Image 1 (tube, rainbow, N blue to C red):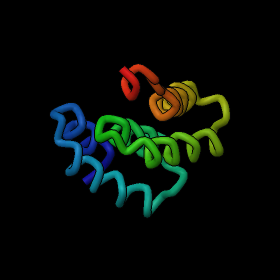
Image 2 (image 1 turned 45 degrees about the vertical axis):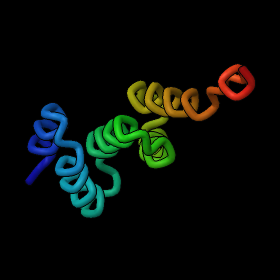
Image 3 (image 1 turned 30 degrees about the vertical axis):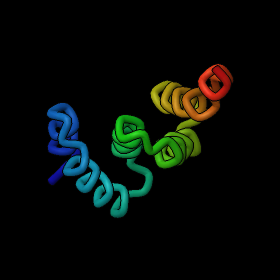
Image 4 (image 1 turned 180 degrees about the horizontal axis):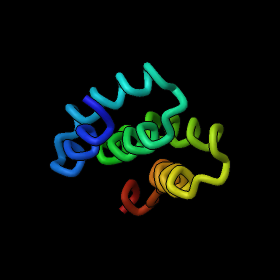
Length: 90
């Protein structure tokens, strides 16, 4: 299995299978930016915001100008910081 297989599975919304491939790819090559970004996107879809933020932050450590990682990290931060007082105090 390779990145292409993981991406195809992601596009079919088979997130867990895609994530398993990416975990192995990243284990063997921790600097694999494409795999880290895709795994971050999967974590976002699965609402695992902390995992997503970790993957996007790892990409930014390797490539500080990476726009996909910046966008993904900002999305996850915004979701975590979102708070609607009316939801709790109607």
